[in-house]
Length: 386
Image (cartoon, rainbow, N blue to C red; front, side, top):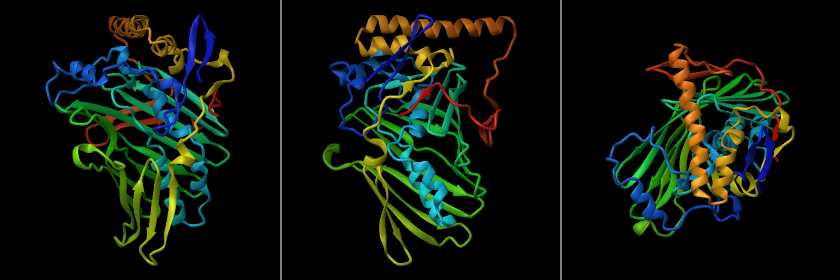
């Protein structure tokens, strides 16, 4: 399903969220034939170890979404309200377990050979679902840094993220390491949970595929509880057979280092938790409940959609990609990118620096990027997630 809204002769295009593999999704049936050969051709002049941050993809390798939308969807597109469950736990351990499940729910399937648009500087994505309001802004272009602020006034929950993907070509694969911090605050309980994100690995040879890999640490400073999760790509011979989206880990008390629970499963299906004290096992996450059957967001108030909104900025390019009109998609994409270059030249000529509209941003070698929201609460959005 595609939602189109005319705004100043440009289209606001919203497409179905990324969901579990195998689900019918007409919005993503735009990949070109001979994809592996095209990917190999794309990287034929790229040296192993190269940083791909400034690498520009032809539209044939884009799907009709900005990276901001992908980040946002991982928060507001859920079939089950995992976030509210974090608030209802009767004790710190139960709340921490719910936060672990919520963290896993933000991991969404990736597709080999296609990637979202690189957001332009100042691009935003603003969506509401129920009482949850989500706002993202591209606060830096080189390097690419995205800030996210999400609030639920009813539940008294706040999220603050900063993310910087650093993709590198490794000869037979591309690995996008995601730097930055994610904070989830349960204000009713006075608890802040800090976590990082796994890395996205695109394997080109011998078997093409996309998967999340790496270690994720979740820590609550107030309670001393820590989770260490490992995303693994478990392959059989030549990568054939089995489910490769493995997640394993543990939850422990940082003061005593005692392991309280063991985590085991697959992030795209079932994740179980084992109590090390009594051996009982329970399911804490079911991907089919959370990230299947997701619906396309809708535009509630077209007049209130910002000119910086991702679905507006890339609307024409997205439409042409879905139409498989590659020449028009290329032209539309060039218009967006050239406008960004013109704005940069204008700022440089006037010796003006660009400042984010919704975040205060700082950087240090020790702490990385810090993105603090200017406003306490995110406002209601004109785009609604169903």
